[in-house]
Length: 162
Image (cartoon, rainbow, N blue to C red):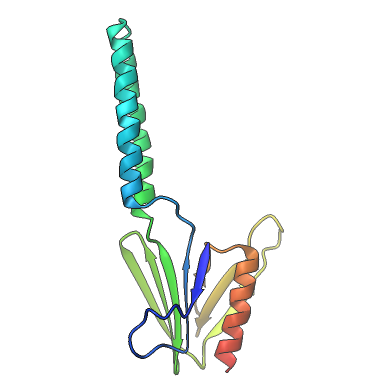
């Protein structure tokens, strides 16, 4: 889980504060395709060997297994670019949540925006970082650890108070 403050890749006018939150993803789309092709090739070789030995019933189950692994890898590739962007500039705060191909934007007035870090009743569950105003709350930082959410909460508090 990574956050980046003001990476400098914005337009000419850099916002006062911005952070990009995304989970650690070790697979890119290209890596998924390579792993899937290698796995299917291995399955074909193994099932061909069994079929030549007379156990042809192994082939359909190997195909089913390859399809399940393929579906899981496609899901991983689909969500490889999930991220959250929090931008504070002037009197505006904007939260952009990108999940798969869906993009959800929430714009708040900076003066009214509040940050709330909710600890769960049981220590087993992680904290929740909520940002909102006027009864409309948005959870951010779900990909962060508890320490990361606490740190982000403190930074957002200090920027919003400034």
